[in-house]
Length: 223
Image 1: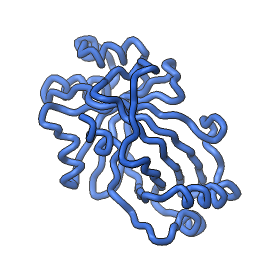
Image 2: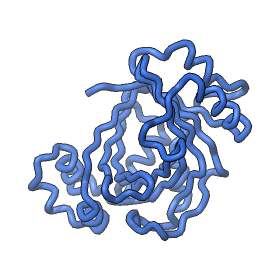
Image 3: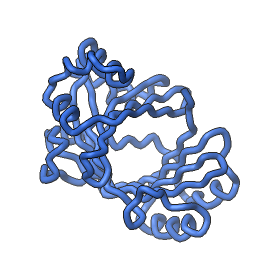
């Protein structure tokens, strides 16, 4: 299991415009992006005591969260993901699931999950049964992704963060969403063992600092 470094910086719109111009000459656009960006929808899981939310707010050193995610509304490529964090390092596991499987999980129909051979699906099944994990909150946002091979660097600009209002209707593209956290814009930088100096210089934004921003926590303000 490989863990990666991750830094998040909250920036403003002017910073976003400047960073775009800095990043484009040096980094490559993500090959999966459409016109340089993609729309992400995630459905996060938590339990009745808000374990994942509380661990994030309290800064627990070892924590994890599960989510279902799709890109650009494409239901043919839905992913079940688990993001783990320890000592400030992050790791993500994922597996593709079908639209029908996603729908079943959202409805609480999880008995089928114990009969498969995918470890991540089995792990979610166990934690739905033992911890009471269930779908909690929709998180939508726009992402502009850039990649840089040395150091396996990934830089993203995330904005237009929105959340469903007390809904987990993940597959309904028409479900109502509202802006979260005053239209925050988040610069994220992820890398393996080292962050090249050229990237460090490019992503440096004056009068900012790294933050422990969580889109899930921001969207939980609405329920």
